[in-house]
Image (cartoon, rainbow, N blue to C red; front, side, top):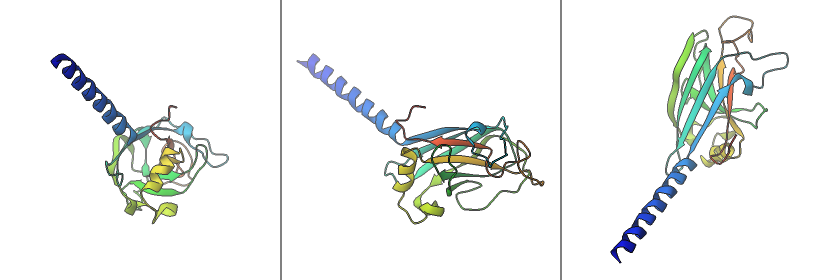
Length: 184
């Protein structure tokens, strides 16, 4: 009898651990950023070696999103945001990630970046544009439906713009965010 009881306990522990892992995965979102994902203006070609990762973790109560933005092989980063938009479509900024979670730009011509660019926590108070005043769930709904992306903008501070790596104010690298069940 004790053996059956122990086996039942082990099975219960395994089931609870599996459920915990599934729930934890449900609150994590990430994307790989590259120039291939950008949607540049007509007659502009994005040629860049820049890459990035954006990692997001939803709080247990669903009211905050902790993020970390990491880049490599990119110069003159001036801003990074979450935008609302389907794959292949540019959309409005809804959350500032860099230089902070409040609007403002970093100076142009900042030089090369490799590593962590920004880390912070997003709440509904950080929403701008079409999400301003909306509940936090509006951002999560956009992410889970594939209608949000992370964009990293660059500018060397020298006219004209869009002259090459480190000089794409409209965005040099981009990565579409998807819900946890998406398998690209």
